[in-house]
Length: 117
Image (cartoon, rainbow, N blue to C red):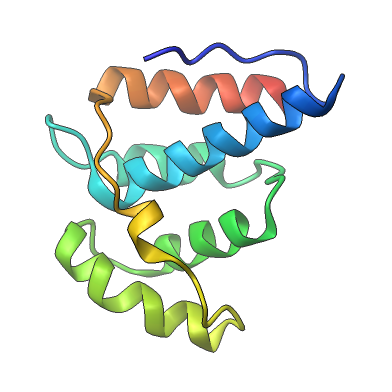
């Protein structure tokens, strides 16, 4: 999978890239990797990240507040938590769609996001 990141917001394509990386990071947080969850490692790294999407930021905050990293528990708890946060109509399948990133690739993705912010 190509995780290349351009300079932030030098053009409309960069914003789309940023949003795609953010969505992928949320998917990794929701599903983990074949090597297990990365939530404990990723949440602190993204704590000060400047999210480009308000929805991604709210989902990140909700995930950080849920004390589990089990994908089935997250799938059960996130909709109600997001509804209480003012986001009742989220298409959840997007964030629980399978990905192919390993633990190392997931951490690399987060480092690239942080370097671009």
